[in-house]
Amino acid sequence: MMQKYPLKDMQEEFPDDRACLDWLLNYRYPNGITCTKCGTVNAKHHFVASRKSYSCQECGHHIHPTAGTIFHKSSTPLTLWFYAIYLMAQTRTGISAKQLERELGVTYKTAWRMAKLIRSHLDESRDACGSDGGDVELMI
Image (tube, rainbow, N blue to C red; front, side):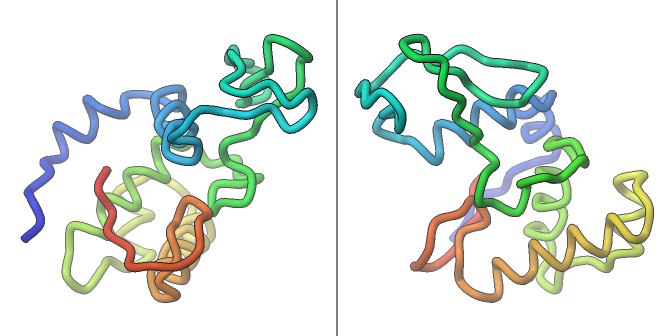
């Protein structure tokens, strides 16, 4: 049985895009980051706000946590993406793009695209964060 996750808790855990990006980085690299350019294991990375990425302290190579995910190349803030996933996960039947438009304050086109991407990843039993296989259970 899934535990309840109130909206208040979600908003406290993910107050801004930086918190969402940090969570995404830790989710995608649970055992630490190995730099793909210099090969440094568990290399220290610092946040580059202008590029929404993390830069290797050794060589300067950038890691983009959103690459290969439904968030990749999206101008929509990550906080809105996380909220949309939360809303869709909280209801048994999901919610319409029109409801997402009202809740998120985005255009219908943006809401429709977000809903389509979220649904397609959930329907394919793929993880919305880029990993393949297994059952999907969103625990934000």
